Image (cartoon, rainbow over all chains, first blue to last red; front, side, top):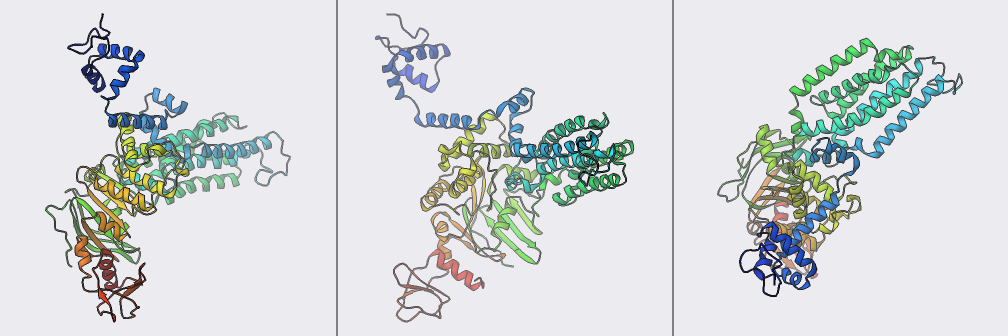
Length: 302
Length: 292
């Protein structure tokens, strides 16, 4: 009779064609050649007797551990389409996992951003195209073009800032004490979260700017102020309490935006001089942030 | 300043002259302490500074004055602080959770923060701590669906990730039922590698059951450091059992056997001297320190 285990060395196959104890022990501990493994597996598929004999050689604890690991893998899942796509683009899996704790990447937050943008964009469009007659809502009535853009110009960069602030303020991270006490770089965590929150907020803001009845360059013009505000908030957080830093950055945008809106020239907030000022703020903030990034490693628990 | 030290060969954790204020409140007042490997119980009333001390040891808070050394590393130095954190497991007193996370997802997140970036190793580590704490059947459950006791066990599980050398547990048995407390004691006793474990608690019986060393912190200062037997012995000859209440006693209460237990210097009439417990020693120290 031909042995069903042709490549197994030594007295491993019994005369009756079943697997010997040594072979089963080697298979269970993973110490036999791959070719023999395939032969044994093919045999086990159709032989209840050998399957039963194999159970005596299996390390029950190891089996339980493997089962637990498989259950954990199943519980964690692969993170859905977006995470799969980003993984394929080369973003490390563990960085993507960290984003799960970023509130401004959650669906509820993003829906809120979309709702606010829909209101200010819709209001601007309604006034621009005459859907709201003159003497309509107080904040918009009487504003000829381009003043209908004033609410949007005020709110859009602040929405981006709010998303970034939610990504780095300890008050939005219930487990931030664990993050502080962990060896993972606080600055890296901050960058991962803020960059992703920034991207997630800029996309709908730029989209809304495209559909607004304003100048075609508006979506691009909002980019620099948004980046400058976020960088200013982060840089300020290295010298003051983080919440105060976010409020300071927000105020530094809201005040001039309101002032220019009140003087009927709201678009000045995104035109050449303002862009230059934002570039200066962005560069200065980046320098401060790089010089003082170790402040994010200390924790903010004082 | 008296230096309160444990009988140690080499102190794994050393604290010298540690002070910390919150406004006008002095949470820690020149605390000196040496801790060796094994379990140390930190006993004290609310507001004694236990959480402040533990958060400083965990490198989460900074002291106003004094020095801390953990395995010879100085947390004031950035690189050494990171090294301490690599060897640390920390359960804060009020651990917040991302409630939308699953049990496994939360542990996976904390494992990444502990620099376990390899996916397979992370899953193995998460499975290990889940099994250790008895939550393996709940890996897929959302945290918002867990009971208070299960959340506390999840907090303990995250502290065990990465097999820490220094385990700091701030009131780990709060919210656990008696059976879970027993399992917790068993778990700590079986931890391999002889780590330094510091746990704060209000439960004197937890201290007596598992801690070879105990430190009593009474508003801001260390009032005792030694073994539970030595703490109990501080009340020797001052604990009495009697049928009637004696108002001269520092503290007295009626036990389950309907007899009054008195702690004081003068024996009540007809009282018999009883063996003191860790709780008696602690209560006597608290009374002497003026804690009410």
